[in-house]
Length: 342
Image (tube, rainbow, N blue to C red):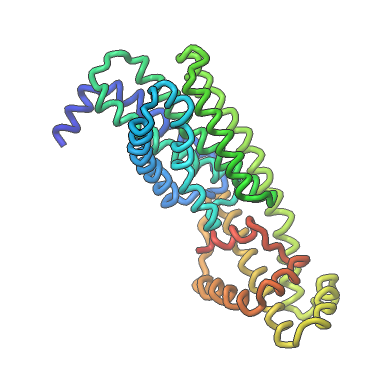
């Protein structure tokens, strides 16, 4: 504890300049999340993974440099950006695979958190080796430039990935094009084509504008999504519960399915649709409550209903799911909303 206190006293300004900007930037992004899409535990793990990724990148870069006898300048410009961007993005890929990211807002925040963790660990290492460096400009550029660049690149990749998934693009192609994009950005940054101070200033000024525009667009999409689907799902569920589904176009469509499925299968399809609508409505309701900073309504049977939905999903199979797609959407975002209930 005494050593930490002495370090802060001795390197206080360097610590503030190299570590605080990216944390303040991340805090600002988190506060911009008006629908409270970001999970604090996931945010913590994204930040932690970024630090782990920095350690892995350090040893990987050391190995590549020693193995191929590369010059430091060429290595930092053309080689290092790729493994660093790939390592930072691994947790984002896990969150996407588990359907824990729904919109560009939470994608950007988790991505920036991973990049922030990476930059924090990297700058701490720099402070360890260059602790006596008196040039404050170096620490300013590392804190406001390099650190924000790391966070920004991973955030951009995360937003690119969720955008591709929502548009049902090929996931591998989306990942490769996203990695190529952030690799170019990272590589160009390491070239220092502009004055380092000007480059740092541009990075720190441009990224907030980009995130603001993206967040505004994402919030509009989320609002439209909630408004368009919520009322229609409530009405459809009401018809099912009142036994009046046959009076609707959805009922007419289900009637055509009776020609292809046994009665027991039709019961499972109808139960699956009703349970899905019930859970979907609750998930959207919670998002609306979060936006208004109101307490969430927690039902004790939600976990049981989610388990029952999984059971029914196995019973109806892929064919049954495809048959219900004209009535209930089962795309990535629709599965993500159910995960918000867990």
